[in-house]
Length: 85
Image: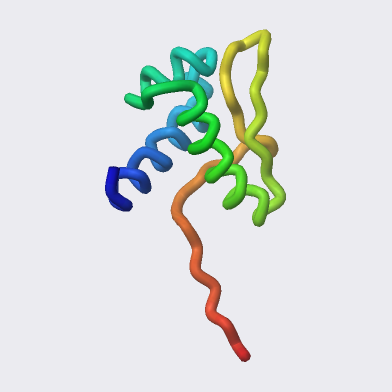
């Protein structure tokens, strides 16, 4: 998988999370065309890295069987911050 494919996959994963339509990890991995839940967890960890910079979390609700953003929000794009030094 090249960089563009990985990026598009992250955006797709974030979209499912925002919609609250992920299902359990096995279903979510399958929906995202990933080989395993481990691959899904890796992708979610990457998203967590970027959302944590904005004081947001990606959590899982066992009762609803879905991942969600806390606080509710969206992942729109990777951000670049200019270095002023």
